[in-house]
Amino acid sequence: MEIIGSIDQLRARLSSEPDVCCVPTMGNIHDGHLSLVKIARQNAPVVITTIFVNRLQFGQGEDFERYPRTFEDDCAKLEAEGNTIVFHPDEQEMYAEQQEFFIDPPKVANTLEGRFRRGHFRGVCTVVVKLFNAVQPQSAVFGKKDYQQLAIIRRFVDQLLLPIRIIPAETIRAPDGLALSSRNRYLSAEERKEAPRLREAILQIRDWIRSGDRRFVAMEYAAGALLARYGWNVDYVVVRNQRELRRPAADDKDLVVLGAATLGSTRLIDNLEVSAP
Ligand code: AMP
Image 1 (tube, helix red, strand yellow):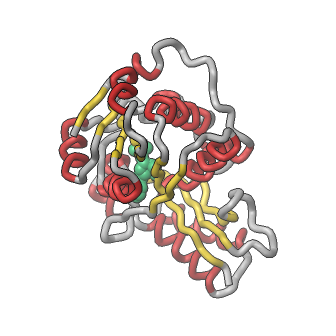
Image 2: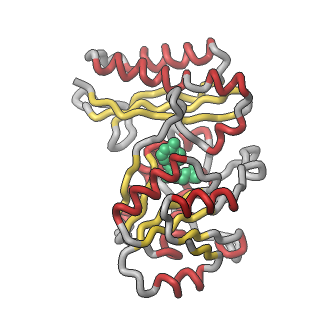
Image 3: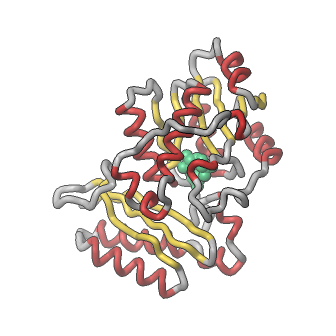
C-alpha cells in the first residue's frame, strides 16, 4: 500500500489511472470505514482512502483537538483490506492559505445536524470538493451513517456537475446495534452499555411506521422522552422523507428516522430508512 501526503505526488501517481474510487475519512479506521473500502474495491481497481481531520467542519468547543488520530493502526487495517493508496495530507497541504472560498450548501444544511453544528456542512462540502479535486476519482463511497451528509454531497455533486459517481454504503454496527463510530471510544463503560438505546428508540419508531401509524410528531416526542429518561441530552429524533429530509407529506413512503443525542459528553448520531406501507 502506498502512502502519499502531497497533492502533487498524488496527481503524478494517478495521472495514468483511468478508474479510481475514493473513500474520504477522518481516520481512526474501524469496520465501518473498512466496509466502504470493500465496496470501493468492487467498483474500481484503484482505491484511495483519504485520512484528514478537517478543522473546517468542527464547531467551536467540538472535539477537533481530541479527535482520535491513529495513523499507523489505520494504515495496517487499510492495507489488510486491500486499499491501494492512503492520501494523508497535513493541514498545510489542504489549507496552504486561509480558505476564503467555500461551498455554500442550501437550507437543508441548516437543519438537523446543521442546526446543532453551525457551519458543519459548509466545512464538509468544502473539504470534499478539495479532496475530489486532489484525487479526481471516478467514484466515491460515503456511509449512510452520516445520512444528511450523504444527501447533501449527492446533491452538490449533481448540481455542480461533478463527474463522480457517489456510492452509498450501509451502516456497520456492533453486535448490540450501536453504529460504529470513532467517537464511541469517548464513552465510559457504563455509557457504552446505554449507547444502543438511541438505535432502539429509532427502531421503535420504525415499527410504528411499519404498522401504518403516521403520527410522526407523537413518535418523535415519545422517542425523545424515552432517551431523556435514561439521561440522554436529545438534540433530535425525527422522521423525514429520504429525498429532501423534509417533514413527510401525506404520500411520502420512503422515510428515514434520524436521531442525535449526547450521553455524558459524547454526541452520537444514528438513523434508519423505513418504507411506510
Ligand atoms: P468519518 O471518518 O467519521 O468522517 O467517516 C468517513 C466515512 O465513513 C463517512 O462516509 C461515514 O459515513 C462512513 N462511516 C462512518 N461510520 C460508519 C459505519 N458505522 N458504517 C458505515 N459507514 C460509516
